Image (tube, rainbow, N blue to C red; front, side, top):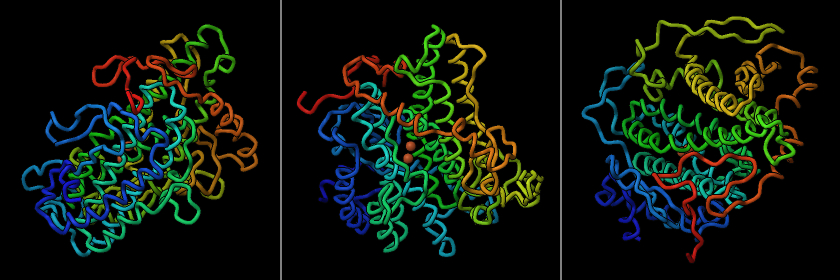
Length: 470
Ligand SMILES: [Fe+2]
Ligand SMILES: [Fe+2]
């Protein structure tokens, strides 16, 4: 087993820490049985054209080759230490960043790390059946790339738990392999990660909207005063960029296919593509589900995490002031059937501050999709990001009903119209019926346009996934 461990690429001097090595040696076989049990179904012996991080150097963090997924080299990397880092925000602003967990923040940090870590294996479980109905070899390879990297993110977080949280950390690491997405007795921690993802439109929406929440959470943790967490999440973000690309461009290609048919005067529904109104409902549903992952608009937890220097803002360095003590944040919340303005201390609005950045980023992607619509010759129709008040399950807006424009409406109106706005059973059945495997080189399913570029300079029609005996 020690030998197997040496094959784990890392820049954390694994071989120099006996205790840590033993802990990881015990965890590794459990990880592999987890992967075999609930990882991607049906392609474990296939050879996948994957990138592997083998070091944090510019030429080492993305090495491409054919790999069988269970043999993927899940590495442990922290972004290199850049001199003496200082805590960049909160009450301890300007003090040296911590290399070890401060006793008074131990529980909060463990909670933060476990909650983030839990999403990584959860998403692999949610997506496990999608390989069987992939729209092309290119897409098949991409989902597996995302899956193995989420597996690596789990490794990265488990390293932190084992290295810094003693026995509690080891127990948490076991629990991460014991919970299951969608299970009734041991579900994953966050709700969005218990929904099955059984069609590719949902997968692309997930990678676009839900994984993007992950980007903003990781960015906030990349500012953390707990330096090992900051450095771990920084390196994870380099991989995360690809996942978001897969989601954003996946949706873009679905939009393009639909738009091309519409521009020719053809009905997407009669031609094996996804009608624009269905795309809009998927967008509404996944965007709003993902908004909830940021937590409540007013949050004392968020204030505490900021004050303690555990979780900062997106690009904290760009903020004019790092204590956030004197400013307030203006919110509009429903109260007795009307929207009323509320001023809250900025620290209590940190979830909302992060959500602002996320919404801007999502709007940028929607603008791109609308350009694709126009370029393909569809005029006068566009996709829209719904209001962040619409269809919320968390925060003050969850106590009232809103339309996608953010107007307060009665519950009766909401119920009567929600089939226009959110995914219906009919939509789900229609999209599911489109899912057929296209596993031939260079071919692509009827409901999606081909990508305009391959992976790592390879052609679009490259054999990104080879059968076991090829
Ligand atoms: Fe991840
Ligand atoms: Fe991801």
